[in-house]
Structure formats: structure tokens, C-alpha cells
Length: 94
Image (cartoon, rainbow, N blue to C red; front, side, top):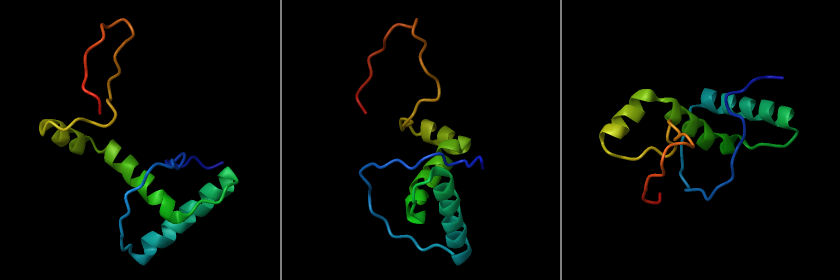
């Protein structure tokens, strides 16, 4: 079984974008979807992989996280979890 970086495709309320991909990138995306489909046993459209791949890329870019933090923008998923022993802190809802 292949260990792909992308584990699953979540289904959330989407924002529609139109993108133009270079042909080699599109072929690679289709091949990736075929491998995921074989391994999961469920058909997966190549277009459904774009968002999770971009999300994974952005989440793994440390320089982006630093720059974003410097601008005061909250990170969508904190990298440091509070320990259960620490007192609760008040936090504005996301």
C-alpha cells in the first residue's frame, strides 16, 4: 500500500474558483486520484484533490506561518495544544 501525503478528502462548503493547470500537472493529479481511488476503493475526482493538497502545502509552510503570525492573523489550527492541567483562557470564537 502506498503512503500518500494526502489521506482523505473532506467535504465542506466550498468556494468556487476556476484554475488553469499545466497539462503535466493535470496528468499527475489524475494519476494521484487514480491511486487514491484504488487504495480507498471509492472513486475520487482529480479536481477534489486540489483543495486538500493546497491546504496541506500552506499548513506545512513554516515561513508562511511566521509571516502570517507577524501580521496578527490567527492560525486556523494552533500548533501548540494547551495541556489539560493549564487554566482555561478566554478566547473569541473563530
